Structures are given as C-alpha cells and as structure tokens.
Image (cartoon, rainbow over the protein chains, first blue to last red):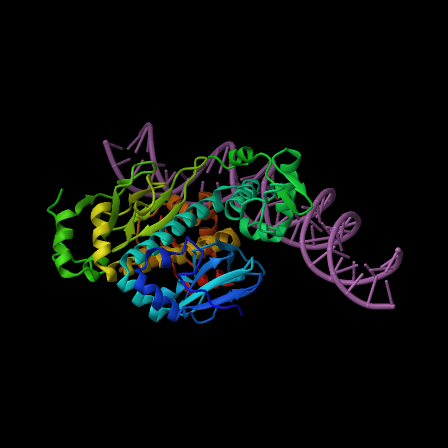
Length: 230
Length: 230
DNA sequence: CGCGTCCTTGAACCGCGTCAAGCCAGGTGG
DNA sequence: CCACCTGGCTTGACGCGGTTCAAGGACGCG
C-alpha cells in the first residue's frame, strides 16, 4: 500500500471529479475516497459481489469482462484514465461483471452515499459523468452492431485498431502496447484464439501487419480500416 | 398536429422531467419543448442528421436502428414511455443511428441549450437521467455478451422474451403485442429472417410457442427462459 | 382475380468453431 | 550447461451451424 494521493496532488488531468467538482468539494472527496494500488491482473470486483460504490481509474487500465458463460467470456469494456468502472452501483445490488487490472493501476473508490451527495451538489460534475456514460453507450451500440454484422476477419481488424487506440504504440518499434495475449484479443473480438491467429497470419502475408513474436506492428493501418468500412 | 400537452397535464408517470424537475421548472420546459405526434413508421431522426437536442417519449414506442451496413441493419434499442432517445445530442454532431416510431407516438423535444440549463439547475433530474443511461449501458453490455455467446436458437428465444417484456401481450389471446414482422424480430435478434422462422417453427413443434398466422403466443415462457440459461 | 408482401421450407455451400498436434521461448532445477 | 516443463502461439483437418439462394404458399387489398 502506497501513500494516498490527494485530489490536489493527483496528476490525472482527465479525472472528472477534479475537473468538475467545486474546489471545496475536493477536500470532502479526499476524506471519503479510498485508494487502491493494484498490480496487473488483480480483480477490482467480481460478478455477484455486492455493489458498494464506484471506481475511478486514476492511472492504469482495467478490463471489464462479462460473467463466464459456457466456459467463455467477453471483454465488455477497456477503461483507462479518468474512466468510471462499476457504474452498476447506481442501480444494481450485485455486479453482473468482473473488473480486472491489465496494468499496474491506481484507482479511487467512492461509496454510494457520498457519491450521491457529490452529485447533488455539483451539477456540472454530474453532467459530465452523464456525458461519459452517453459516450460509453454510444460505443456499445456500435460494438453491438459490429458484433453481428462483421465477419471474423473484420472483427479482428477492428480489435487491432481499438487496441492501438486504447493502448497506443511503443515509441521505438511502433508495436502495440498493452502486452495482450492472443487470448485477450480473442475475448475482445468475440472470437476464438485460433481464428484470431489465423487472421493475424493472413494480415501479415497481406502486408497489413508485422508480427514480431507476440508483438504486433500495424504497418498498414489504412488497409485495416478499409476492411471494416461498410 | 394535435394540441400541445403541458407537463402538468401529461399522463406519462414515467417522465423524468415531470418526476424530478422542480415544479417551477416545468413551466420553463413547457415554454421550450416541442411536441411531435407521429404515426407508426415515421422517422424521428436519421443517421447523418445534425443533432439539435433530445427526444423524450411520452407515449408510444420507438426503435433505434443502426446505420445500414451491407444491406443489413440492427435494432439497437426499443424505447418506450419516459425513455430518452437521441442522447447523442450530448456529445455528437450527427446521429450515427435512426429512430423510427413503431406505434403512434407522442414525443417531446428539448433543444441542447435549454436542456443544459435544466440539467444545471435540477441535480435530482440530472442524476435520474444519468441512472437511465447507466441502465441502458448495462443492458447493452448484456446484449453484447449474448450476441457472441448465444447461438441462433437461443437468440431468438431471448428476443421473444424481450418482445413480451417491452410490448406485453394481447389481453384476449395472449399473443405478443407490437405487430412486428419476422424481419423486425430478425433485426432485433441479429439474425436473418429464415433462421428466425425456422426456430419459431421448432419452438412450436416443441410446444414452447403457438403460431397464429403472424401472431405469436408464448405458451411455455419458462421453457424459453431455460434455453438461455448459462 | 391478380398483385404485392410477408411467411415458410428445402437444399447447397462455406465460414468458423472445435479438436488435435507440434512449435517456440522462458523459467527452473539438477 | 542441459534437460525438462509450462504456457502461449500456430497450423491443419474436420464437421456442424448458419447463411444464402431459390421456390412455393398464405394472406390482404385494390
């Protein structure tokens, strides 16, 4: 456990609390928030657990994965700096999903009671959180469409672009950051591992990507984008 | 065009505006809102159109359908009384989807400028709208999971249950309301028409449903639910 | 009665999920 | 330093499920 970081000290410039709450409220938040410093691969919460509040990612990344169904699961969402995780707090008794860190992460937790008070007294903040959820909703609508209208090849291409978008690329060799396994990619794409690999191999022989061990370099991003155009 | 209904007169008891805005603000809303009285099958907005505000359904039902992709589209959402449609207003320049009435509907429109002011001065209202979006987000996460983990048969079963949930049943013969075509069901399930029909036929011969022409009666709802259990 | 729309079924094809086997790299222990 | 092991990556083969194409039936409407 590391020393707690106050909102004033916090370097996450995308935090909605810091950016949109009245300053006097930041002290209140400091009082009530709990901070988690988690290594990669740690569960923040699991399906079935009772919901107590909401998690805000200050640093790092978290994947939200669905409950398992017939031995499979799906990555529902990747959350990064400033994102809210566990929004289910607003309306549900228990989490229907799991949240797992995929990088070393610093995460703030605010319980429901206090969060409600903050919402009531900081309309701009509430508005921005609402906007965040609207954007997430919009993304999900798009993913839902893609999941039934794209074929396997296209879904893998799309996922590669999403990974680049979320994790960025290594500044040296331009390979995708995130250190994801093929299995991770499969769970994001909603496919099985073998088909992901097959398509990666195809992409390589078509000059769209370069594989360096498990590292992937998107050498022809435009080409990949073309694949998923309507 | 029918006469405008004021918020005080409005009989929709699920309207978040009416339920959660301070009373003095309802007059303001009456001033600025526009009301649409649309017949079944009318477009409320279409993909690519410029976003001007948000629509609140007072009476009736609206389906939000994705942009067409390779000759196919998907029903992204069914919205009923009190639901917000066109939330994209909060963050997007143009609609990425279409909204079409599937019943005769009464719909209120509030433009972005005024909506923002209402949000800023009615924290409880903003909170409830946020909660609405959180629930929608949660539903979408679940649908996304199902769309890749369920097989065709299961998706059709799920869709039937959703239809019952949204539209209810005719009080006389217990057939599903909504007057949906097989194509509508297919677009909701994310399948093609033929497979929907094939599965409906299977369900009938298994005693799970009864087909009366295009009408459908869920004679064994529990049986249908069992199909989609994990 | 004829036309259009929607519903239904059959048959053929092929994409993809699954199973099985081998490979490669990194870590561990003798 | 090598032998072994483990976990992730890769490829091939096979069979099922689902998509697609084609054709016919039911129904409502002018």
